[in-house]
Length: 104
Image (cartoon, rainbow, N blue to C red; front, top):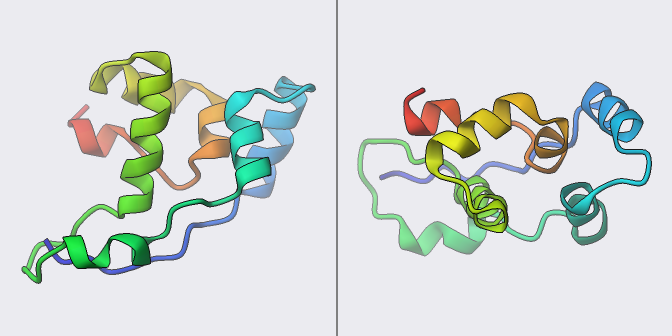
């Protein structure tokens, strides 16, 4: 797969506003993003991807998805459902749509 490094997008302003209103004291995923910031970047993974014609999903996204999914002990489909329904996930994992990764 061909890795085309991308910058981690900022949290959309509207997402941040809604998330902070829903979680006035924050929660672990929002604190993770606020206090640790972006702790993975595509550049950290470039050497792991061979040069092929197929574009790869960005590794920083996959790494963060794996951490959050493991923290909640969710299957792939359960994580995709949480991604669609939970504003705290959208806050911590901006620009990610798990439905495309699990086919649903």
